[in-house]
Image (cartoon, rainbow, N blue to C red):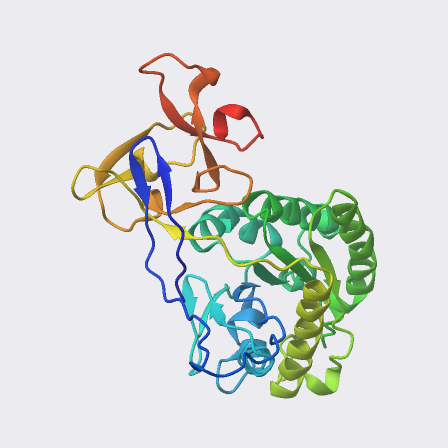
Length: 325
């Protein structure tokens, strides 16, 4: 699913491939009453560990296959996104990583969110922290930091935070209730800061819905899909969902040259340049509603807010400055 957005940046044209359907009316007939608004197009990133990837699902579709079917039936135009693909479903893209903890997901969040810019993120993470007894007392703090990171990198996205599902692991069950009990306050703090973060309760998944000690069977995955679907519909009713931002190259007026982050480095101060167009993450720019131009989780920035000819252009942490507009 691709989108269209055009803009002008000092002689550069931002152009993206698109398909756009326009309503048709019959010539010479009375216009029909206006139809209900079309459900919001969704670019969904399933983000998490092996549960997201699909371990325990005979097909490998995880909850993703069931969620896709529900959202499609509700009329949403859909694109699931991520760097991995698993299962025979029509759109198996996802960002599930078997065995990963909260900190490991945080390590890739800036990059993958800058690349794909979802408008919905279904987050299910924490099982491996708890089951592996990895710094359990600070796991809620890591979760809060991860959500902060996600909302900074994709400020226009809705983040659905799933509670950790029930397991047959004695290690995990000893600490899971306390971890889950910490999540509502984290989500409330995010909402108080104006962020579109919602808690999704996965308690409908029971031990009867497990394929092994940690992973759901398809009945459990179906219940997870129900919960995430309800979260998406609630977010839509609250007015949180907006059309996905465009993602693509910024093309120069010079033939086959694109705006590029030098060396694909996400470090503050990395210069922007023009380079041969190559569809890399260094040339994957988004244009969110705040007027910035973003790549690799950072904003295009005029160094020091300078206005003199020749002032360097670089990428920097997004900070709302006029030199990033």
